[in-house]
Length: 477
Ligand code: ADP
Ligand code: MG
Ligand code: ZN
Image (cartoon, rainbow, N blue to C red; front, top):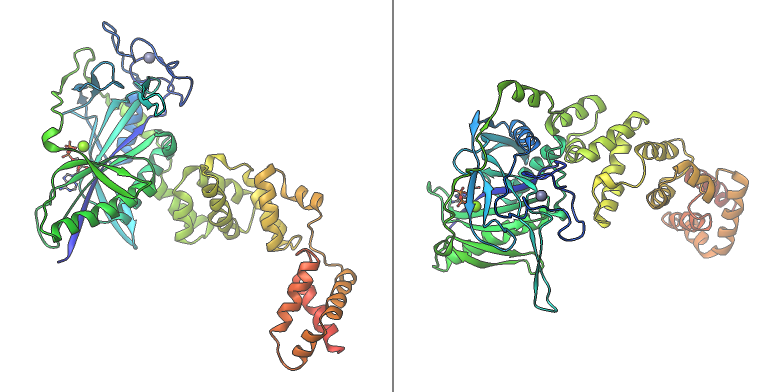
């Protein structure tokens, strides 16, 4: 039997506002526990929330950038549940009248464009954080995150594979970054996703029963969770079992999920309209202003890069997936003329460094001009491609100008023919057997000699000069 996987996401993004959703406390990440809070965000009795206008503005921005309709009238509701990280015993959210609805995001997988529906985007507040101290057995609570504004983006069950989920999530993340709505730092929990997944026999019209995996905080974890849960459900059905609607926790270290609670144990949140906050009415002119403030989005940028810079579609997609990377590329391109080489460095060595060091493109430790300068040094034959990798490492570690690094470290290509000839003669003298082989027709051995010469010159000899001098000298034997 062939199965089809069906996936819908609920994505939470912390908004990049300065202050919290209902008070003036800072939204800054970290800080000593319980130093970013006040009676309002700690839910003391008798306090009154005041909605932060920026929160509405950012949510509308996210809505417009994902082709949503914006509700002229919406309201906030109490979602009642008790949990120690939520001292009010209810979360202020939006229930039946969300701020944005009925949108979509286009994603491309295997050359095909697919529309992923956005059911709704609503605003809500984040909860505090529980810290379980394994040593003492105590649980400590940090309310700094309580009241940090969130948007929840709910998709239609429109995705059919892990690749589509990845493409959608990356696109959504890029849109949120480009619009400045969220910093999207997944390692700090600014962006996280719940994965809803079901399977059904291919061709069946009705959806199967779904499970939900909550709070996945890396793209890798999302993709792995999708693949693993699809497999688990299919094998469950194949062995005659049934899928129960439940919440599962994904353990990324183990690479498996386990059941947390079933639908029967699910909360009844008893939503009701928040009486302390008035409804949100969005003025037409305000919406136009917000629309006008939306910058060029990833798709438009990608097309522009292909047209204006002549880089391949693949490169343009890769680079524009991150706004910071795209900004870096654009700056570098301004001061360089070998754009494709700049793109190659960004996709290759630079991205690898970022990954290896678990850094975001905003944290690249050297400036874009230095990358185009590095490319210029290679193109004007001042350093070899191999040495350039070393220079790149120094740039990464020190932030210094590559031209200065080359001078300081004496990394210039040696084109001085006398110096190179000296090394060639030394190497030839040390390898009579290889010369014999070459004379007998084993042309491959020339490569071995070149390798020796390059090693002697620490990779700095100009390869072309080496080759021609070596050929010259070999003829004398
Ligand atoms: P709830 O409010 O209980 O979380 P929703 O109906 O709002 O439920 O759906 C939440 C998410 O689950 C949405 O992203 C939706 O696309 C997804 N979803 C709903 N039904 C299915 C299904 N059968 N298979 C996969 N995903 C589903
Ligand atoms: Mg849900
Ligand atoms: Zn506060």
